Length: 450
Image: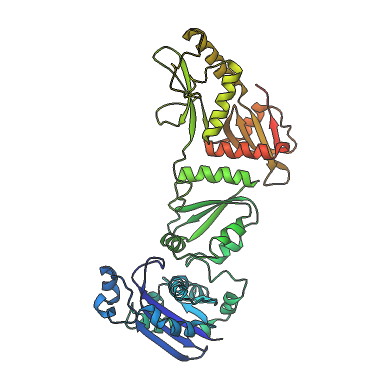
């Protein structure tokens, strides 16, 4: 087995926007270094002052250094067909792989992280940063925060790991089925291995235990593992990987329940990396107001912060479909409902009744809408074999969810409500449940007005 032990210095913390300023590679045959390479690299962008201060590499030092394209063939030759070894391997690999790909080279090699290996082989150290490991294990380290100095310290550490690997962790890490080379630096592999292949919601937590991401899954183990199989080079992905320290989860009976719980938890916890679901939903409402002539007007509009809608919709066309149905059933004016927007005639010209008479039809239409809002439960698998999962929609709104015994008859609404846990209703959750009930009508149990 031949290893390429690597360290780089860069202009920033993630590969998609940063550049390499220095690279060092020591090729090792498992006993000794058999080849080496080191050079400064012109990053073609300014080096931030705080990085200059930390590494000692200045803009003047790299001004006449080769650009990465000039050294790419040699770097690829040194790395190809070797095991890529580095302290926090995904950081170094993401930069070098991205730079090589931009030059037309593709690395398809195994990786070893000396941070994760040291945690296995030398347990209980106070810190696993390279400097602190070297102090704890009395490994010499010189020229700190320079590629050659840190890479040589990693060589000495790796030789110590090879010598003390009595449990064959290196062999286990290099197995094709191993996840070790892809996992976040501080996340124990055991936490993923212990995840069940069942529906649920998972929580990624930082080193202080704060939730930084919430997700739902049909199979918790498969979904969580998929987060780390292709670690991108972008800033958000790289920061996300660095900040994941722990995983917790909550089992759910069905994927639908997991989706509802995920939505609820995101709205409650506002995790920093749940950017897509944290955006404000552009939802719509059915509003009623009285115009200057005394006529009750119905309108579909975007939800307004300080106005309470009669009913809400995820999509505008759903609102218009409902409103047209109300117009036809109760002889309402399309123009007074903003459905006929012809400007040539007065809006009340197609209304034969006085406001008092017309408004009574609007009242009846609204009361009928309220009375006809559905009340139903969606039944599915429970967590335990002797139970059902149950999600309840009451008068068109999400009431809550939970688990009921299979021995219980799902007929009386008041009894079910006592068992379920109430949740906050929102359009996104309601829309999921409606669509699921429409797709699987055999799992829907409707209730009359009780």
